[in-house]
Length: 240
Image (cartoon, rainbow, N blue to C red; front, side, top):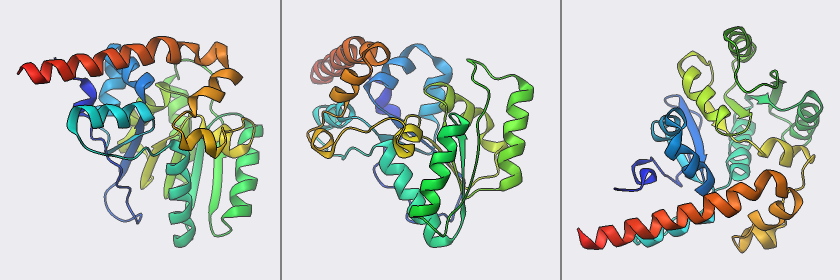
């Protein structure tokens, strides 16, 4: 059985303009890969998005082992900054959907300081596992009245990816990006690991030390499961 992520549209080529068809962009790492194995809606949101970027050194190494191809890791943070720069050049608009009002206020202040030609708005949806139809309709209304060039969705995986996939056709935005923890990193409410850890491919380690209760499962369950799948499929590919 082939690895499911081999069918995903993994790419490290990000558009250099905001023109063209509407884009739904997601990220994948070993943990999200493992979740997608047992969550059909999440798997579909990943396999059918327009661009899926490898936000994890495990994906990069897996691709190298199975295909012999070198791809580069692009974090959700990199994706976020890429589109802020594009929107700044265009003098366009971005919308942040997710997180708390206080975090969103910090984000808006920072965007206005760093990207003076970007118009920015935001909305904090109710904190719940499943949104009601009324919740989603109101979120759509907030976004569509603003008509952003880029919509950043930060409601944690897999909820954010499934919501963006479900409502892609109803969202009046040129680009829709699910970027999760980036909201907190950019706002400064959660400190992102230093470039030393990032360059070593060990960004996960200081995050685990900082948030062990939240991140232990992805480190000690998802990562070993992913590694087993990689090597199992490598062995199977040699036997075919």
